[in-house]
Image 1 (spheres, rainbow, N blue to C red):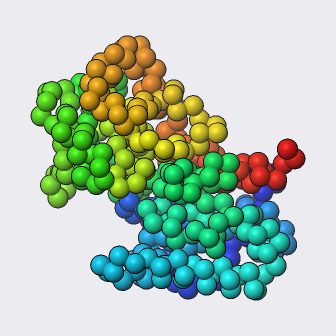
Image 2: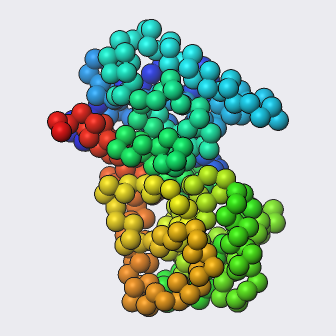
Image 3: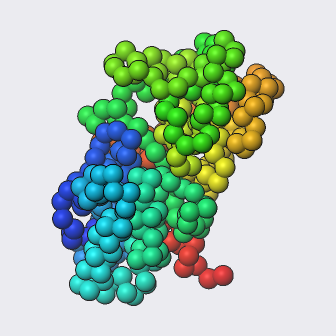
Amino acid sequence: MERVLKIYVYKEGKKPVFHVPILKGLYASEGWFMKLMQGNKHFVVKDPRRAHLFYMPFSSRMLEYTIYVRNSHNRTNLRLYLKDYTEKIATKYRYWNRSGGADHFLVACHDWAPYETRHHMEHCIKALCNADVTVGFKIGRDVSLPETYVRSARNPLRDLGGKPASQRHILAFYAGGMHGYLRPILLEHWKDKDPNMKIFGPMPPGVASKMNYIQHMKSSKYCICPRGYEVNSPRVVESIFYECVPVIISDNFVPPFFEVLDWQAFSVILPEKDIPKLREILLSIPKEKYMDLQLGVKKVQRHFLWHAKPMKYDLFNMILHSIWYNRVYQIKPR
């Protein structure tokens, strides 16, 4: 990939929906990828005739923030905005029509992105945080985008790491909003039920609360990552960031980079129906197995980190590899 791949970044598209990366918060993955791709000199070419792939640099977060009419419960205008954009580049350039958009890709982390890109962007490679096979995510074409909660745009690696395995005395930790149907079930079964199971609802606002949340992640053996409104959760990457073994509870979720990473080596993946048995399952994992899982988390951590300048095997390069891998998979002889 590093020797061959060339990418053309479309200049079309009005700010702030296009070309304005959001580098902090829940949707930072799409912003960091946009920033690093637009500033890249290794993969990016100015001549589209040299390109293997074409990047459409829009922000699904800014699309929602700028275009969506509050409390309208109608997202049609967001979809039409992107439809108009694709029609413009299809008219101006020959590359979209040549492949039907199959060699074009987008990177979007908002929950609504699958809807916003339906139909008119259907054949594109979509890197989505909402990687749900039941709402149009296609394995072999689309890419599961890690959802990274970046707390500092200046230093995305702030507070990286956690306590060694021998000093993690909390069995399991979760704190967060009651989004979706699954999290209330988790709290119903495990809130205040076991002193080793720190299962909470939303943490109160404030700096002290944020630090308490981070310290719990740094001090727990297992960090519970239940789905919210959609299948994805930022806690998966947060767990890896703080070296806590993620326990993913989200049916139909496609884990990032599954084509190259063995998730069984550094996480616990449970069906949603097993929430009542959560404590029993975690306690049944032998100490040696837990130590292997936690070591696995530390080994894969580098693949889930943003750097101001991309590094080999970091998150930017892993996302790009998955996009390239899927494009090659699509065009190889069968």
